[in-house]
Length: 223
Image 1: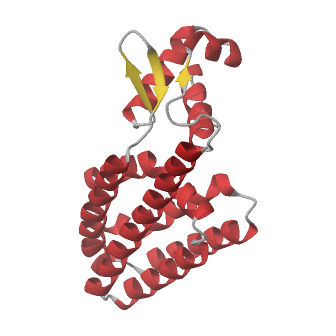
Image 2: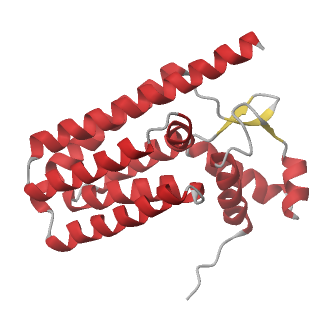
Image 3: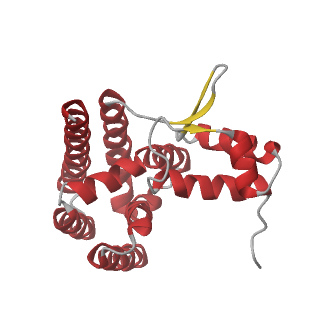
């Protein structure tokens, strides 16, 4: 049975896709009148959609100016990824002893799909979805839904930057290799090495993103 979407949900889903896909750069004003016309709806579902995206960290409301796409600073990016390290290693540590053969097979299947999407280069929209789905498959057996909700929020907020890192730092093969190594360590039940690899994986992704942003800022200053 198909899931029914309200107008606000439809607008939120499509705006999220456009923001994460880079159509709206950080700091872009999202005018409610223009969006209402674009989606052929009233302003009410547009505002509801923008409020939903604000809760995900993708939109900010500025007093007397309206809604803008979020532009994260290097300091905020580092904070996001440090929080990811804390929460994701915490969950992985508790998940590994609970992983069943079916859980590991599910994670491996997702990793194959992720590899195919990365290798094709033509399914950028799916890269981060597969990335989070793979990590989620390893974390879910921990049985920590509140922590997983926080991890999901952090991943949503850092999504566009993860894509940027993969696209501009030529780290795709390294990311693929680390995912396979992480799965194998989880399969072996090696909690310490798996958590150490996960911490390294997230920290190096963060530094790759920071390098891209700093270079982009330098290029703009020199232009």
